[in-house]
Image (cartoon, rainbow, N blue to C red; front, top):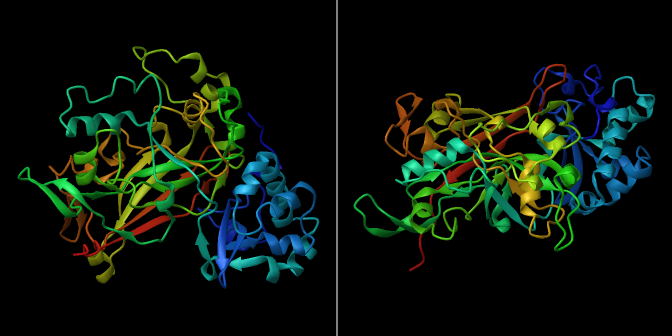
Length: 441
């Protein structure tokens, strides 16, 4: 595992004043990467406070050189796939030069401030895009509590699949329908069974959110060559929030081989990628396994992954309804959970994914699955929060929910926090639900 360096220094401050504010998502210790558009042109950028560093402009101004310059050139055209494919060393070099350039006592402070009007853009003035071309998307099922609850809701005799504690379970999702935060969520039409047991087709009545974290693959692996658990961190570029929207009514009726139309109508991600290096101060041991659980097979058991495969990240989901907005009432937090509620680490997910020789590629996305814990507040989707519709979820102001309604907006947030480190955030992952399209006749 890589060691901490000067970019993690908790005493480091930036001359970008907003980056020094308490609870800022993007202090100088974060520096996440993303892609923004302005005047129709997509560019690679880095978040600092409430600003975006335009990497192309920083390069043209002579503020970046060496491997950092190589990293920026690999991101030209508004896609980070080229940078990801280079390996994490180049993203680390870019991070180091930017941290040095943006710190309040930078030796190049005068030059940086002279170029400020060229290299910094206000976040409110840009449109955030998907950070890369996502060629493939795999979503895992790694919360024991989420899996068991859904098994009980479905009336399964054994609510936890037999393989769950032996391997990270997953399905192959639909990359083409992934969208950046803020994109509309159109209620899907589909086939489902209604409360009278009749098979129907129409707007899905049980729409749900799923609070997840996702990892972007860095350099990939050639076909038929697996990735050893001891090397896996070199294959993870960074992380973002993921809302794997679910039409549970469709999903539960159709699911024989695995999720299909109940899942692939849209997925939302936060646009900033928090790099693996930025999260080094927040590493935790892998989640503990019960004494009665099966022992890890050697290919999923690595000393470093067991010692530092977890990450100290708290996650939240908020809901803003049409009534709340019209009455100027604030959004309501409905979920507060933690990444430690996963049974498997991201390292184990990636290693297992490639264990049969499956070739992962730069920019592929790997979802954690819904991050539900044992307590009520840590239930990370509406289905769990309402016990599959048995207990309405109170939202205040006389509002309740059994499922998400048109006009509801879900806002996901996450924050890495650990003693001795400056906490860093992921930005928001928002999605507002709009009515289903009229079916063509």
